[in-house]
Image (cartoon, rainbow, N blue to C red; front, side):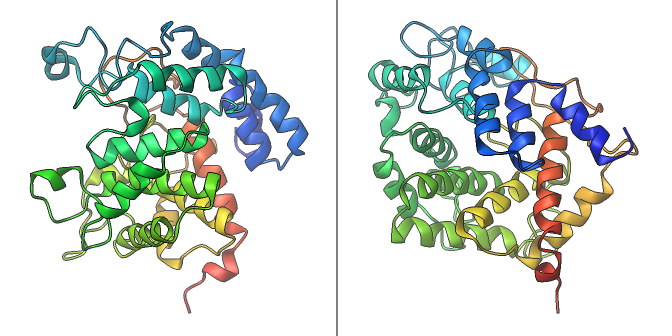
Length: 329
């Protein structure tokens, strides 16, 4: 693989969850074609496999955030488990399970009726207490057609003075975090896509974006140093973790939804994406999170990743299509 055509062929020689996004985002195939491919997520490959692990009550692994059989020693010894309902549902959204399908509608209905958060015991679609979790709950709920406006209202009110969010706010933190902020931003954007949003949610989303843009997506505001070197490394699945490729993919989606041009302050992160491209035209998986999963969707750390490559290629395609607008005067 030395050219984009070969890389696209490699991406297409994969799972339906990747193929339909390649068709839509890279090949600009007719909607009827990519929707037909997307429909296969429910019945073939990773999507069907993940759905096969669903409990009769609609949950995964018997719990909302943690598996029913979770022992705190597991987190310390093996890492956070990723098999419970919240992470499984988010992965189905990433795969592109059609929210209008009977299986999707039945799943979110059962989750609403039967799943309770480990923290507080409240019904699933009422949200949890942490901003990171609620951001993803809003994204999943809005995507699958649930009214999550009460959670959105809470998130808008939990914004910190610097424009972003931090799950440690309840413990006294007054500075936003990159991870909490991207989780909330993705939720607010999905809510805006589904409903148009509210004046408050749209303003909050813009302030959260500004928090990241002022820092060029990865730098400390005070020193200019990277806030975390891992922000520059490619991770998948991200779960609740942050990296610049996740942020760039968010800004791409936001710009397409709102019909706006890319912000020039994304340029440094874009340059890093270009530099990390391998000689064969792909991008590697730099690291992955430890902990229990249903199954792997990449070939391993250090190897070319279809998920990372798909994200990188569509981000660069979007950026390059606006190259003149992105130039700094």
